[in-house]
Length: 219
Image (cartoon, rainbow, N blue to C red):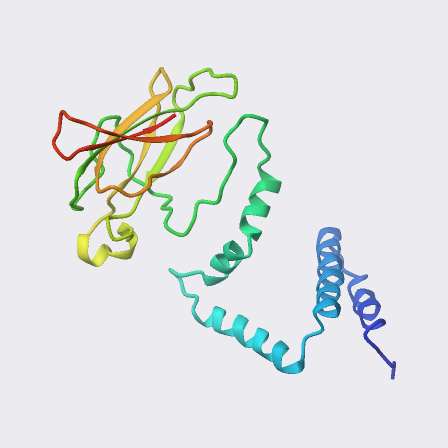
């Protein structure tokens, strides 16, 4: 029987992995073991702390189902999701930085035409959103896909209250016109989350034409 200590255990595990048939699996597994063992040596957890960590991961798994993926949220909280996205989607200087879609993104977002209202059954103050998409050198991009979605005044999204409203609302997919612009109406006054490929900025302005209306500009 081999005698192991905290300095030899890592090499023993790496020996077991050395025979992996897939080169990429071998590379990832070896790196995982090295970094995980280095982390444990650095923080030197007590047995009670390690048991708590295992219990935390177990409870995270128990909270997952076909509609709820808590490990993705844990990845987000640790900043790993953003890191993976940044590695896989580098952008040229001057372009809008990439970001993860988040838990309330819906792949089957309804297609809408510019100028349409995406409020659905949701109530709130009228809000006009206008925006544009351009290349890093300022040329307008026609036909760019723009996904938008936002919450109600209380911070809840449609997918959190489908039993109440019956269908998706306050979200849509648009295509920019020949000048790279898009616009739509909605209700409420939350921050708009949109996926675009250009430098973005937001501005709010009162719109006197419609009492109580707001205007949000994205460019």
